[in-house]
Length: 294
Image (cartoon, rainbow, N blue to C red; front, side):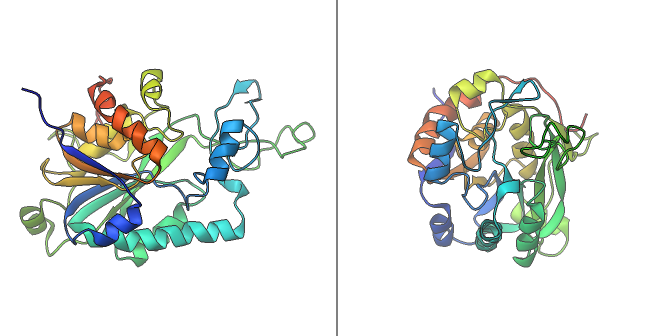
C-alpha cells in the first residue's frame, strides 16, 4: 500500500498565509528566504536568464573558472538594504506567532546582511541560539576592483566566501526546557546520536547534478545538507515543519524523506510547479551519510 504524503504545499503569498495561521501551530521553521525579494523580482530573473545586467550580473568566467549566477549583495543601494530590513521586520513577528514555545527557526542568510536579519528577529522576541556554517566553496567574493583588475591584481575588495551562515533562533520556552519539551515537544535540537551533539559546522558543497536536473532552482540546497537541518529541528520527530519560501521544495523533500510532517509555501507559479514535480523525486534520492555529529 502506498504511503500517503506527509507534506502539504500551497501556492500563496507567505505573509498572507502566516497572518491567517492560528498561533502556536508550527513546531519548527527551516527556510532560505528571498532577501527583500530583490533578486527574485521578475525584472532581475529576466536579466539573470539573459545573462546580462542586474544583481545576478557575473562574467561567464573569471580567473579561468566558469561561474554560475549568484546574487551580488554588494551592489545593493541604501533603499534596497532598507527593504531587506523591512522584509525581515515583517516576517519575524509572523513566524513568532505561529511557532509553539521553544520552536526553532533555522534560516539561510548572507554574511553581508545577517546583522540586519538578527536585529529584526531579536526585536520580535526570538533568542539567537547560534549559527550553522554550511561549508561551500562556490560562493562569491574575493574579486579584484571592477574595471581595474589588472592594475590591482594583488587586491580583493571583499573576502571570498567559503561558508554560508544559517541563523538559529528559538522562541522562548515556557519555563524550563524540560517542561517545554514535555508540553510542546519543542525547545531543543535533536542529536545525530546519543554520543554526539548537533554541531554548527556542516560540510556541504553545491547540489549534485542529479538534484539540479530534478529541480533547476537558483538557490537549490543539497539534500545531504538540508536533511541534517530538518532532522535536528523536531526533537521527538513529531509536529510540523514549515518552509514559508520553499522554492523548488528541497526542505519539504528532506522532511518527507525522513517521515516528518511539513508545510511548504511558494508564491511563484513557476517554482510551485517545479516543487510539485521535484519533491517526490528529491525525497527518493540516496545521499552519502555525512552525519552532523561526526
